[in-house]
Figure: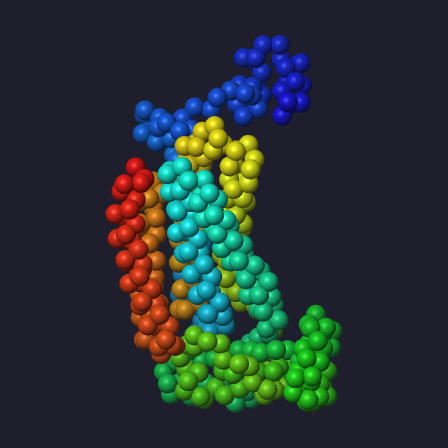
Length: 345
Length: 61
């Protein structure tokens, strides 16, 4: 910054004609007004007005995505909008973690207002920890589990061949939407498929777990899938309702001819509109959580604008924590809408 | 809106979420334990909200 100031002052003789000094006040030592006291015209300190303008734009961003989700879901053909594929207990735990973190960030703010620096550091540390746990669970457990799960959509005219895995007669009698997808762990993929390596790895694991080595199919263009419970026994009435605890995978195997397959993919964005919106919205939300953690870290560490600010202007630090806390509450509020629409409904 | 007010909005939405999840659990039969757990959490959050209002009144202006 000092270098930029020096360079610009060499080019522009007068400080008033220097655009760096004129329009970018943070490059100067100038005092930024209204960081603590409220502006007389708005009744708010400047950062609070700024964060609410920012949050208004965020409402439009996430509102647009939620609207897209609703219209895609309403417009989806029966049987092509998956349900029950996400881990509800893990999602519930993550929701609880975010709610707790919102409480602790308010406690950190209140501690600063009461000039209790030790308590502030403690509650802020818990908030940061909660955010890190949320992201770690999402990135190291939830998403990777999806990338190792496989789904095959069967062509409608070939569905009768796979009735024992789809159970559409049972679903019709129960008045439910038909099922066109068979899901589980891929044990063998057609030759040349990009999933061959993953299938080989799964087949080795399956053989080790069960002692069965019959996963390899004689035909080169078949998919072999270790079935999820719902496809292993599709007429079981307990599979007609959602489960909170994940049902263990069966050891039953399905062999599906590639010519009967409409589309086949791991649970990645390319799998379906459902997973495309799931990864987009949860990914964008995860980026917001990461942003919040970075800001909280800055306010927690002994740096100039962080905890060290307490020595010179504790109210300014309290205002910064309030602004970050408003952002964090918004991010948590978004998750409270994301969780039920993707995990429960 | 201050953080205090936004926190109350957040807690209100969280209470609704917990009550909704309890209703989902009982209605779908996904898990009765979860339903009772969420119901209990929503009651605890109501208690927290009341305590927060009374405490924050004197601390945060």
